[in-house]
Image 1 (cartoon, rainbow, N blue to C red):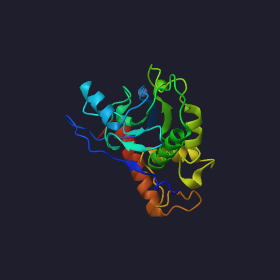
Image 2 (cartoon, rainbow, N blue to C red):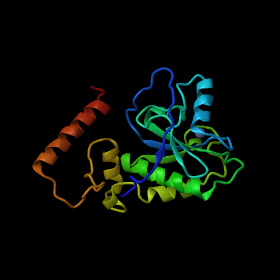
Image 3 (tube, rainbow, N blue to C red):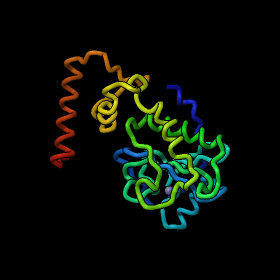
Image 4 (cartoon, protein in one colour):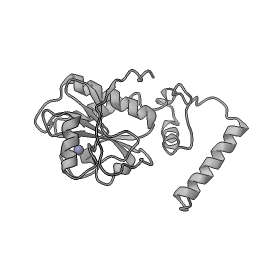
Length: 215
Ligand SMILES: [Zn+2]
């Protein structure tokens, strides 16, 4: 694992209006700023000028590879219409419709997305344009390369390539199962009667909530 060495830089930002906690995280959406040079403060100001609470992305990765916090990660962002309540938004400084991404920046985006996937196992890594009609993150953005590199370390360390990987990822994303403190799932460890009971209870709650619409 060992992604906790990721350095996230922060600047104080003043927010307008109310910010809401995000109920789930099914997508990590990749964007470009469509601006060759910009800071978190710049984007925060631009987005407030559009009438938003503040910067709509959760992270900005700059060309030098530094990673900056935008909107706090657990809150609903403003970066992808129709998906803000279920996604984290990662923006790259630059205009990748016409520029080429520096390797430091690409590597930093990969590390950040890997880190996010540890916390949101099974979340899909997508470019903005794959969800809504837009050119973002630009034709030169190395979307496939970043996605492939990030997903190598995506889920529980010990489920990579396991025959049950997809099912385990789905259950984890939906909150029905969890891994251990080290980020492992321990797929071959037997389940106790207590763990079995908890899983059945969570599954029934899930069905009532999601399928039947109960609180
Ligand atoms: Zn975008």
